[in-house]
Length: 335
Image (cartoon, helix red, strand yellow):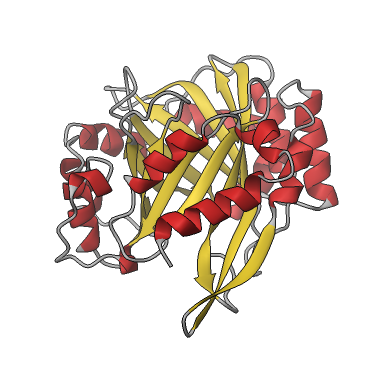
C-alpha cells in the first residue's frame, strides 16, 4: 500500500467528525507536501501531529524513520529526505544505539519551509553526535552539545537532539529524561528541580514554572525537559516540559489518554489558561484499525502520546498535544 495513501487514511481518521476544524485547521495541504518530502524508505514511517491547545487551530508535522527501514545503499534523493540526504545516509549505516531520524516541519497553509532534522537515540556513542551533526550540515553545534550534556545531572538521559535551520538564532535542541526516581523527588521537592535546572545552565524560572513542573511530576506520566542550546552551550530562555503517556517502568504499552488521570491533567492545564475545550477532541482521535496488504495483515493506529508545556523567560507560553500515528504488524503494540 502506498505510503502517501496510508498517510491520507491516517489523517482522515484523526480529523473526521469536525476534528479538522477543531484541532488541525487549514494545514492539511502543506502537511501532505511535507510528508511526500520525508519518505525515502519503502516502509511506512511514524507520524506525529503537533497541535496547539489554544488559539487558531493548526498543526506541525513530524515524520520519524526507523533505522531498520533504510538500506544504506539507497540513493536518498534530497526531495525525499527533506533536503538532508547525507543525514539519512549516515543514519542508515548506524547501529542499534540510534533509534529514529525525524524531520519536523513547521506548517502554514501557504508554505512548507525547510524542516528540522533530529536524531532519537537509545544510547549516544562518542562519535554519534558529531557524526550526525556533520551529516546534517551543522558540525559547529557538536561543541554546544558537549558542553551542555557535560553539565546536566548524572541521572538525566539526553534522548534526542537536532537542529532547526529554518528558525532564526540558536537552533540546537536537546531533550532530557530524568530517571524515574528523580521525577518522584521533583514531585516532593521543587527546589531540587531548580538546583538541577541551574546545574544544566537554565536560569529563567519566573513565578509559576517550578510549581507547575511539580504538578506535572506528580502525575503517573513520564516527565521530560526540552532545551534550546546557545553558542556558549547554555540553554536559552525557553523551557519545554513534556509528559509522555507511557506506563511506569516494568510495565509495557501506553496509557490511554482516555483516563481519569489524563482528564485531571488537562483540566489543570485548562485552569492555567493554556488550553480550551479542544483537548476533549483528542480522545476521539484514538483508534487502531486492521488493514490488509496482500497476504500481510497490519494495523494502523493513532493516539495522544505527549502533552508539552513551554515557558519563555519564566512566563507561560503555550501547551501542545502530540498525536502519534502509524502502521505496525497486527498483534504488536506501539513502541
